[in-house]
Length: 514
Ligand code: HXC
Image (cartoon, rainbow, N blue to C red; front, side, top):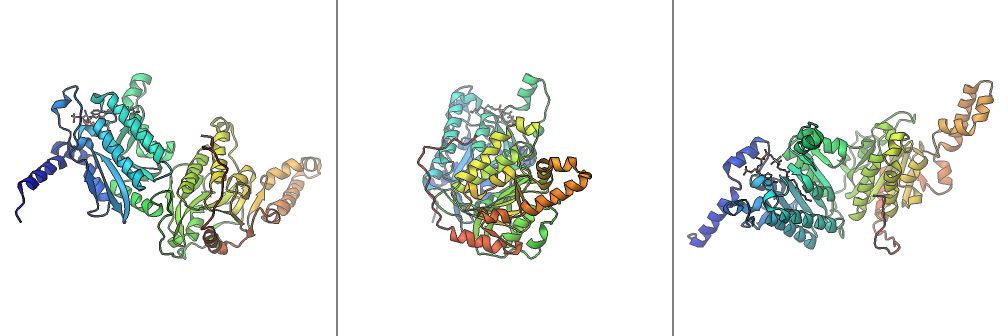
């Protein structure tokens, strides 16, 4: 059949728009190791699943000669598609068109797809690559950002929101990703900051590169603004796809079930944790020893490494893991690790993901720095997040559970549903050495051989308290289990918690220590 004139006209119009900001701008984009906005969407979504909307939208700028310029699709691509069959809504800013800057129609396209995502209850993925507010459109650009921030907030906890930073994300623009659930960054490509190097130089007289100010590593290791770090756009898209397999489409659903699979034999749970409580080990190996296929998908791997968070599957079900990391600062809780864990716990709670907590910590980190950094306020976030979470909460005390750390790490007292302890668990107000020094000070100082007396008292304290049996005798621990029983009993606990239903007192919302 001959192609009609009208169809030819449509094809020509499409071809023109698909050129974006033109060949030169595309070449510049490629030279930076970046794909174009549409290429990115194609790489991320299932083959042939993307449907684009608002392709023919044009900008409405009328000042500074803007009326003479065409900005194809107004510098942002929106649409819907699927990832491994799961529906997603997506927008991608097109840096080749006016630097992906956000004008009125650009923002209306983004808010349109955000509204669709919320209405259809599907995840939203935003790919950011933009010079920020389109300077020529003045307050219309600011209004656009405000509309986006509002929707990010209203959608929070209803649909998953993922932000991918694949270029600059400058000025107020950073607050949209900051309001979303997961932020992905790519080395040498992502740049996020409120005020750029030029402003800093003018105002403060300090010279700093964009990379050192707000590059991917800075946000992954130092600020904690990013959740996933990668070395290339390809790797980044693989991370996004994998995350999508672990999370539900919205807050009324559970994550997709997978075929159950046993952990790999090389992770022998009985030999990972050393008996000597002063020796470190990698708690991720304990997680790998209990999850299906030993496949643990870590989140915020490079930030506050003294706590580990991420997803795994138990018998095919997505499960969130929170674990102290004895390899890093003995696994203490501090300002950053409390923030990191608390936010993840709230994510799991909002999206029906059971939480398994693995405990091995000497407590909160002491020191003036921590006190002055607000460890009281930040540490309280962890207590708040665990207490208010109503998804199934399972706790395994591997070794040390001292003081406030014992309470904070999903203890029975914060309403853990099941608390298990290994025989190596030590549940006490503090470590035996510190405890003996305080409560037996007189005996030790007045002894003929204070060192020998101290040793004797430490041993006495250990025998009495540094074990799981005192807690088990009060029912704070439900069962003392052998390490090899851990996976089986955790899977059973998740299974019997399937229909957990906890009524909470009516309130508009609580006041977590933000
Ligand atoms: C209009 C912009 C623009 C902007 C870039 N462009 N940013 N146009 N408004 N904000 C245009 C450039 O004029 C240029 O157009 C094209 O995009 C590519 O930009 P280049 O500068 O050539 O690219 P590059 O060298 O890679 O530098 C990228 C950049 C730089 C670092 C992002 O463009 C930059 O610093 N832009 C301004 C960033 C900024 O301060 N934005 C405002 C933040 S305030 P031509 O036609 O030459 O190709 C803000 C407030 C929001 O966002 C508040 C919300 C609450």
